[in-house]
Structure formats: C-alpha cells, structure tokens
Length: 179
View 1 (cartoon, rainbow, N blue to C red):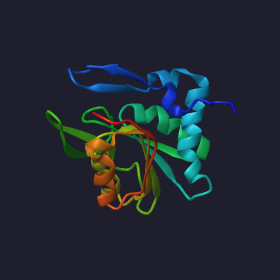
View 2 (view 1 turned 90 degrees about the vertical axis):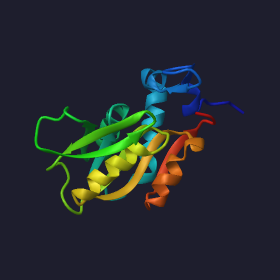
View 3 (view 1 turned 180 degrees about the vertical axis):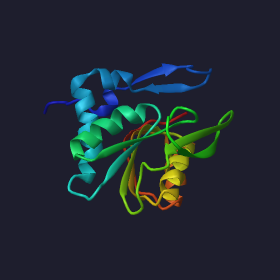
C-alpha cells in the first residue's frame, strides 16, 4: 500500500513563534507546494460541491488565498473580511477579543445581500474570535452561513466548540494538539 501525503504533512511547525511557548502552524509551506495547495482547496470545497452557495467569505489574511481559490472552483463570488481601515468603501465593523487585547474587522456594507448563502473560509481555527466576528458581520448583512471551513483546527483552544454553540457547521481538514 502506498502512503500518500495528507494536507497535514505539508504544514510545518515553527516553535516559539511569535512568542515563547507557541507552536505556530505554518501553512505557507502547504500553499507553496502545488499538490499540497490543490489537495487543500479540493478537500475544503468537496463537502459543498453541488450545494447552493452564493459567495465565499475569506477572513484576513490567509483566508483570502483559500477563499479566492475555493470561490473560483465553486464559480461564486468572493468577499474579504479585513482588518479595520483596509477596505476603501463604506463598511460595517465588528470588534472582538484577542489573546492580548482587541481587534476590529470590517466588510463592505453592500458585499452580501439578504438571503445569500455564505461559506466562511480561513486557514486556522484557534479560539474562534475572528471567525465569530466575521459571522456577526455576515449575519448583520442578512447572509445565511452554510458552513465554516478551515485547514487546521486547534481543538484545545475551543474555537470549534464556540462556533458550534453559535449553530455553525464547522469543517477542518486536520487538527494539531497544543497551542
């Protein structure tokens, strides 16, 4: 039997980045490999093939890379949710808590129409704060979230549970133990 690589095999871990004690899961090595990147995109969109989805929303910043590729494959529009001050048009914003303070994300106020079915995409699910802020923005515009899809889940940080408690369907391609 041939041992084929999985998405997890393409992800490197960088110890003590950005702070001591953190095991940073680096997806840039996955993105740089054409087979790994194709595998990740295909596996992320597979559960949604044939489902009615109007737009893919990517969370800043690696969610843009994945979201654009997935939107292309699904032949739907792509919408970015960005850090405050990065979008040029009229926006709505949502604040959320970080490990060391607070942050704000924004979306254009005309990016999603009421009733549109949305797939939320990002590379990593940790505490779920960024994803929850994105979900709140989408819901404020009247979007209906089909699911949230990630490459990596860090289960010990509770993000999946947090999103599921909001009634979200959550998909992740792999999980890593530890923070």
